[in-house]
Image (cartoon, helix red, strand yellow):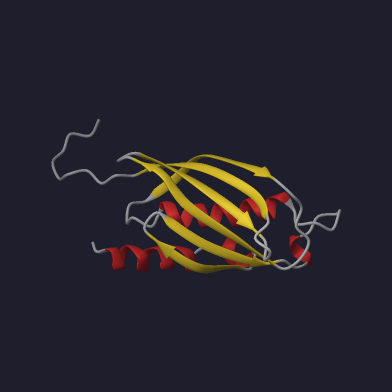
Length: 142
């Protein structure tokens, strides 16, 4: 499979994500090992303090993480994810940039930075995936 096919598959993967769609997350860019998504903050994203809910921030970061980790044409599933909230966001557009930190045949690690329109860091997310590496035909399954 070519890189272009992998990217097309990642775009289809995003299009099938109903939760991302329901949270108004937009795909900006995807490339091997990286992804960028954005979310226009609205009232549905806010908590009772009037700031963006931590769950909305996690969802934004997790969406970028999922796209980046599935951009190689090999299915990947999260096995660990962690987010640190750095400052509150109230309005505007938030962007999540995911970047691959390390990758081997079975595991890959990613960092996602969420920023606002002034490039203020809102949160940092780290995640690890299990990569479902295809087996060679006839290979013994362990």
